[in-house]
Length: 416
Ligand SMILES: Cc1ncc(COP(=O)(O)O)c(C=O)c1O
Image 1 (cartoon, protein in one colour):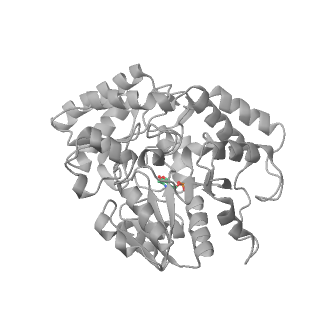
Image 2: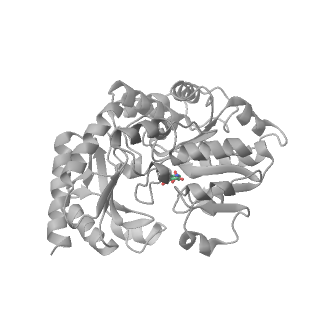
Image 3: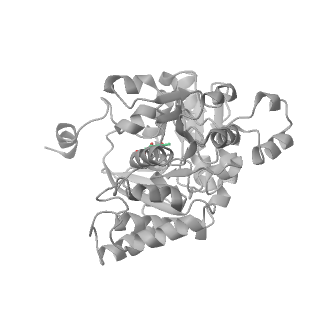
C-alpha cells in the first residue's frame, strides 16, 4: 500500500476531503511534495511558522536540546533551562503585570488552564465569550466556542457560559459580578479577521482621530477592560493566532491600549513544535498551588524541545526585526487584491481575509492557487473568505507572486 492509501486507512480523518498533499520537505516559505512540486506557503501552518519553515537557528536549537535531554518529569518539578529561559524572555517582552508563564502542549489547553485559573481565583463560575470566536476544541474550549453548529453535537458542555456579540458595546452590561472571566480574541481570526471596533459615537471620526482613539480608548477591548474592572471579572485575551508579530506589533493588544489579566499563547509560540501557554501575574497564578495542590498539571506541557525551538524562533523574530516588516507587507497585499468580485479584504497585519460572495467561489480560487503551487485556505466561521497568514519572512517578490496567482484565480474562476 502506498502512503496515500495508508493515510486514508489508518489516520483518523477530520473531514471527508482533506488536502492530502504528501509533503516530504519544508524550508523557508516553501513546502515540497513527493513529486518535487513546490508550494509557496501563504498560511504558515495556520499562523504557526512566523519565522518560516525549519529556520536553521530553530533546527540547531532543537538539535542542541536533543543532545542534552528530552522529557524528564511532569511540568513544574525540575529546573529546565529551555523553559526558564523562554519564560524569562517572554515576560521581558510583556507588561509588568504578566510575569508568570504556565506552559501547556497546545492552545486549547492554555484556554482550559485560563478558565480554571479564573474560576479558582475569583470563586465565580460564569464565563463570557463571544459569538464566532474560536479558542480550541477540547470540551471546555468547545463550550465557549462561538458557533452552535460545532457545539451542538457534543452537549452537555460546560454550564454557565454566556455568549455575547463581538463589538457589541450595548451588551457589555451583561458582564457582572457573577462573571469569573471574559475570554476574547484580540482580533477574531476564524470569523474572517474582525478587529475590535469603536463605539458608534466615534463612527464619523477622521482617520487620524481613529488612530488616536485606537491608541487611547473607545475601542471594544478597552470597553471590555473597563467593564471587567468595574465588576471584578478577569479579562483573558487569546493571542494564539495574533501573537508574535502577526498583526504588526509583537502582541496584538498593544494596538488597543489594553492589558489582559491572563494572556493565551500558542501556535507560533513553539517555533514549529507543539506549545501553548497562559500568562498572568504571579499572585494570580499562585492560586493554582493550593486548595487543591497541583491545581493544574500536565505531563508534557512546556516540553524542553518545544521551549528550545520557541525560544530560538522568538530570538530570530527579534534579531531579524520581522515585526517591523509586517505593515509594509500587508500594504502590498491590500494594494494588489482589488477586483469587483472581491467583496472586501479585512486585515490585521499579515492576517488577511479576502472575502468572496460564497464558499463555492472562494473554494474555486483556493483550488486554482493549489494547482499553481500556492497554499491557502478558508476560515472556520467565514468559509467565503480566503485565508492569508504567511510566515512573516515572506518577501515583497513572493507577495507579488502570490497575489498574481490569486488574481488569476479570481479572474478565471470567479468571473468565469
Ligand atoms: C484563536 C485561537 N485560540 C485557540 C486555538 C487552539 O489552539 P490549538 O489548536 O493549539 O489547540 C486556536 C487554533 O486555531 C486559535 O486560532
